[in-house]
Image (cartoon, rainbow, N blue to C red; front, side):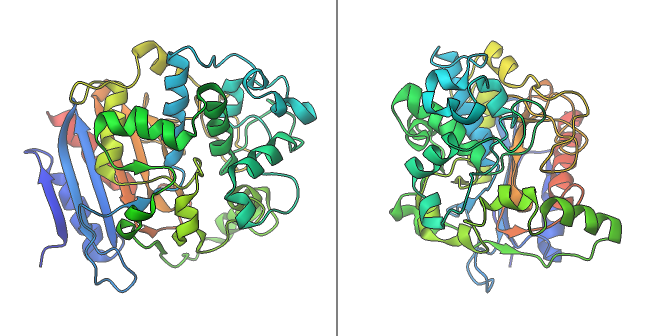
Length: 388
């Protein structure tokens, strides 16, 4: 029986399929989808494996997946669309649009600085329950009242979950709509793709169960580094869990899928994400989501060269919400922009190659360097694009 449930590959792009089959056969990928658009055309659409813990239910074209921080790239796009429409200025103070945000020394922060993880509010102050974290007004009011954990704009530190509420509240203030509603009407509907921030009940049956490979034994120096920046009591742990509100298994829960958590709970598939990114750098079926100048501004770095991310412990580069090419996030090379998510997922574009690509999976892998699945698929796609 074939490991693939969807097998669409244009001539010359077979190496991406070969890479996918290798990882499905080895079990490194259990259920996943990969999609590539090149020069606007869908050249790779691969789906395969299984979507349940037991390995009995096929991962197919109807399957949806939580994409964790890959969601942030769509949130960045939504803000950029507001900038293009004159509703937001990246250089304006965040508090101009959200006055309450000025509290506790945050009044001078610009929209660009907040989107580039320079606000110092990578979590909220004090305990917070999961139920509270799923309530939009509770989290945004807590963020407004939080004293920055580092001096605003003195450095950057990955706002692993809070980024989404910060970007989403900005959109709500200037449009009167939730980010989930804005994305649904302004991005999803024109392109006819599957993507939700806040999944309706009637779509829940499509969602793959998230699993994780056992954490490998790392060399002592790397294990210490990972514990220092992500272990119990670290700033990384508080940022990634919102002070423990999102514990193990949270992102398999229906109530978490239903909420709007724009930093982490987007639900989609690779074909949809690749289509969205292709429509950012060019036209897809007559739809283009951003103009060239707005795209240039959105993907211009706000991070000083070599600055180490306080939360991640390594140098990262951020535009206005987008992760940009760096040693840590290579994507397809210079000029790439997008976002990756916990456990392996990614969606990005590289305008110079006219390449848009996504990989979404149900089995998370803990790594120190690049996820070997993700980097393998990207490297194969880049070679295919360059051979045309």
